[in-house]
Amino acid sequence: MIDSLPRREREIFELLCSAGEATAAEIRSAMADPPSYSAVRTLLARLEARGLVRHHAIDQAYVYKSVPQPAKVRESALKQMVRTFFDGSAASAATALLGLTKSLSPDEAAALRQAIDEARIEGARIDEDGNPEAMERE
Image 1 (tube, rainbow, N blue to C red):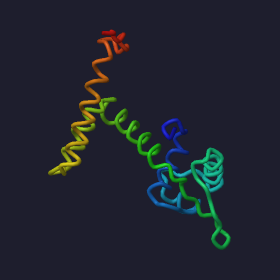
Image 2 (image 1 turned 120 degrees about the vertical axis):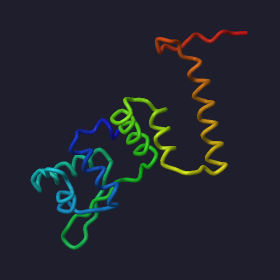
Image 3 (image 1 turned 180 degrees about the horizontal axis):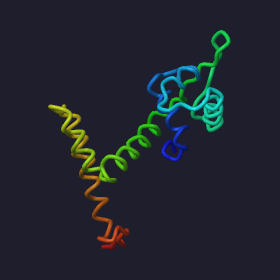
């Protein structure tokens, strides 16, 4: 979803997610190589039409904020990060993330073990060419 947005719309959406809420002028000032103010307003209107942001008026300014979609946004952002920085390897990304922490709680370790076990089972259903294998019936 988010990864399918054009580059500028994605940049604005990510800025809004980070800031919580902002005016078009604040968004524009935070952008790398910003377009015109009217272009930022147009991009915000497109994001609003897609249902990703909404606005409310404070004094005479529109203040924009992202529509809460944490699971979708998180998944999309992680997919983009894995593709960009880890050549599509979720395992490499997970290893790098685990290297950032010194310890895991027992619940976190159990959740990781469960995710690895589920990935192993799912991986066993994929042949060496990446195609699902036919499940044999007993």
